[in-house]
Image (cartoon, rainbow, N blue to C red; front, side, top):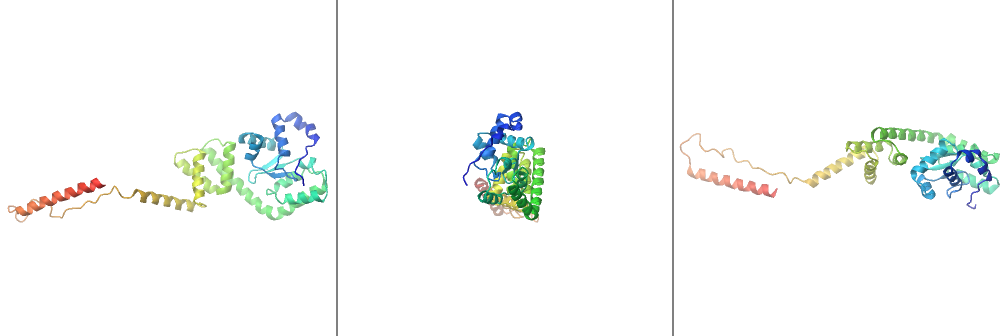
Length: 299
């Protein structure tokens, strides 16, 4: 099927477009309807970075536009987990032509959708009964099987993000749209426990910025860290490596003289000191002092 998208003239007659949208909003909406990632079913995968690059906007501007079209205009739904975009009114201005070719394309593309709730979101505004039935039946059949399992995973992911986000804001500062994206991607890769541990290590090092957290996570990625046990084992390995490299160069060996050394007098015969014994004692003392200076010099 040829890859092109039509924009209905009714787009410009919509009161929401004419009266409420700014020129920037209209430009963004037209982009969502016609960009190269769009599909026949009105649900497609696209990252915010890609949108920013193709529109010439900053990632912060894209985040703001997505939020406005989601919460204020209620025209789109975007999954941060799967990076999928859904256009609510897609079915109102598309599917003007039916036929087996179109139906087969819709069926094939619905199978590619990862976030199933987006199928229900688009289906609400589809006017052709036979196509709307395809959406609803496909959604209902999957909901009874994988959706129930996926719903638990989605709930866990949401609460993981909320926990990490709350910890970040309480200890690091304001969570910007940039940080939100980084936290989401980090949680998807490492999980809540590991990301939280990286932030705690950052704070213990008197640091309070995401770059330091990201550096720790990168090191753990390189060492294939998956659990807290892996982190502890890696810390021990690094500490042992540092100890071995430093060696024992600062230590010196001290030889103690025999117990009798240093006595100037014999208890049994205090007045009969052997001259030869005294001379040997002094020579031994000089030898030990010389050896000790040599050892200290080498150390």
